[in-house]
Amino acid sequence: MTDAGVGRTTLPAFATGPVAAVAAVLAAVQLALAGRYGFHRDELYFLVAGDHPAAGYIDQPPLTPLLARASTELFGDTLVGLRAVAILAYVAIVFVVALIARELGADRRAQTVAAVCGAVSSIVLVIGHMVSTATFDMLIWLLVSWFVLRLLRTGDGRWYLPIGAAVGVGMQNKYLILLLVFGLLASVLIVGPRRALVTPWLAAGVGIALLLALPNLWWQVVHGWPQLTVAGGISSKDGLENRLLFVPLQLVYVSPPFVPILVAGLLRLWRAPELRWARAFAVAYPLLAVVVLAIGGKPYYVLPLLIVILAAGAEPAVRWAHTARRRTILAAVIAVSALVNAVATLPLLPPSVVGVVNAMNKEQGEQVGWPTLVQTVSTVWQRIPADQRDRAVIFTQNYGEAGAIDKFGPDYGLPPAHSGHMSYADWGPPADSSDGPVILVHYPSNRAMVRYFRGCSPVARVDNGYGLENDEQGTVVQLCSGTAGSWSSVWASLRHYY
Image 1 (cartoon, rainbow, N blue to C red):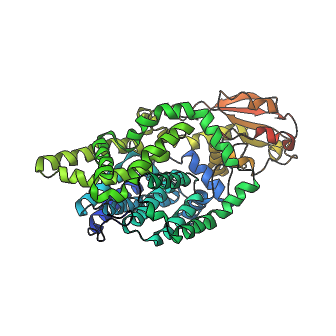
Image 2 (image 1 turned 90 degrees about the vertical axis):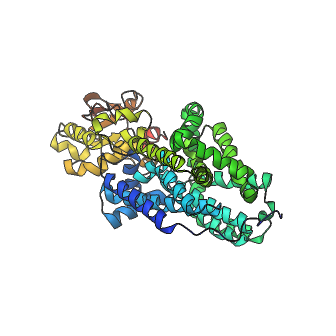
C-alpha cells in the first residue's frame, strides 16, 4: 500500500435523481418559509453594507454583503429576494454532502441518506433559511473537504487548483477557512498520506488562494487588521460561555439522534482499511475542536467537518438498516430529527410562542420586531419640531437597529440612521452642521453612550407586541437636545466592535 493515491479508482454512481429530489423538496420548504417573521439583524446589516461596496469591512470580508446585494438585485428587494441566495447555497450544500459520501464509497442509497441527514441538521437548516456568513462558510468548507478527499484518494496534485480557488473565495467570506486548511494540513502530516504534499501543484494552489484573497488581505493591512480586534472582542466577551457550551452545541447543531451515525462515521474514517487515505478527516475534527476551545471561538466554527463525518456515517447506517425493522428505525430517527430541527430553526411557530425555542436558537427571535422598533422611533421623530428635523440625527447602539431604520424608515419619513457599531462607524459621522436633536436607540443596560449627548430623556420603549424576550425587547428610545461636542469630535469615542 502506497502513502498516497490508495483509494479506489472508480466510484459508485451518483444518486442524481434522489439527491435532486431531496434538494428540491427541502428548498421548496425553505422558500415557502423565507418570508415569515422578518429580517435578521445581520441581514439588515448586509443590505446596508452591500450598498457600500468595498474590499473589506471592519468585521468581515466583502463576499456575503455583495451576495446579499446581488440577490436583491436579481430576485427583488424583499425578504424572499434576499434569502434566495441562501436557498441556492442550501441546495448546493445538499449536493456536496452527497458527493462527499460518494467519495467515501457510499452507494446511491447511502448518498441519499447522507444528503437528507445533512439537509435536516439544525445548522444546515438555519443557514439555509437566512443569509449569513456561516451560510457560505459551510458551503466552502464542504467544497474544500470534497476536493481534498479527491486529492487524497487519487493522488492527483491537480486537485490543489480547485482547492486553492475555493480557499481564496472562502477568505473573501470568512478567514475561518484557514482553520480548515491548518487542520487538514496538520492531520495529513500526522496520519498521511504525506506524499499528497509532495507536488508542485501545492504551490500553485497556494498562489491561487493568495491571489483571490489579496484584495481583502490588502484592505486589512491598510486598516490595521480590524478583524483581529473583532475576534479578540468575541473571545473576551463570550469565550467562557463558548467553551462551556461547545460540546453540547456540537450535538444540538447537528441533531442528537444522529449521534450513532456520527460515531459510525468517525470510526469508519479511522478504522476502515479501504479509507486509510481519508484518516486525516478523523483527526482534523477533534484537532480543530481543541483549537476552537482554546481560543474561545464559537461552537459552530468547526461544524462543517462534523457534517463530513455525518456523510461518512451514512454508509454504515444503511448497512445496519438491512432489515425492514431497522430501516423503519433509521427512517424514524431521520424524521424525528427533521421535525424537531425544523421547529427549532425555521419560522414554523407563531411569533407569540417563539420564546419556546428562542433559548436554544436565539436567531429565531432576532427576526421578530424590527418594523415595530422603527415605528417606535418614528413616534419619537414626530416629537421633534418640523423646523429642527433637517439638523436632527438618529443614532443607534448597534447595526441591527440602524439597518432596520435604513430599511423601514423611509416609509415613516425617517432619515438614514448612524451608529458607531462595526462598519457603520466607517460610513461616517453626521455632519457637524447636524447640531439639532438626537434620537438615541440603545439597550437599557447601556448607560455609557448617553454621556456623549446632552439633555437626554427616555420617551419610549420598544415592545414587539408578542411578549418575546429577544435582544431588542425593551430597547430604550431617548430624545436628546444634542451632542456633548461636535460629531467629529465624539465620533471616535462612539466606535465599538461588539
